[in-house]
Amino acid sequence: MNFFESLKELSEEEFSKIKKSVLHSKLQKSTSVSGEAERLFTIAFERNAEFDLNSENIKAIEQLKIEDIIQAVDSYLLPSRQRRLILRMSGKNHPEGESEGEPIYSIAEFKKLYKCPGNCLP
Image 1 (cartoon, helix red, strand yellow):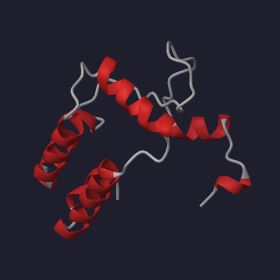
Image 2 (cartoon, one colour; image 1 turned 180 degrees about the vertical axis):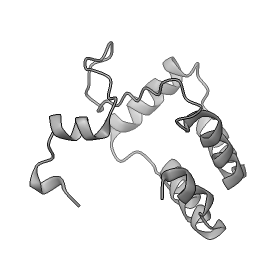
Image 3 (tube, one colour; image 1 turned 45 degrees about the vertical axis):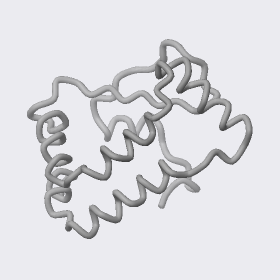
């Protein structure tokens, strides 16, 4: 079963649990002064001082339905519909700017090139 099929079979109860988890993470307070300063700096200078952005995100998540997620996946992420999906991830202390690397065309090839050490397996 692929991701899209499992998403379509997700029960309302399971979806509700996932939503609650996301909402809970949005409601978490910063645990350090530097974390809070970083959050406020981001809001002030990168989000055009939208200090109510988090509450707007929370409202949007609360209104989200499983059908919305299925429609988004169907419209943008299915291999038959996507042209190219680029995922860029970086850590907190990663410098801004261009990323280095090559596109991943095959998961199997990626696994061959970058073997997982024994301690990272589930």
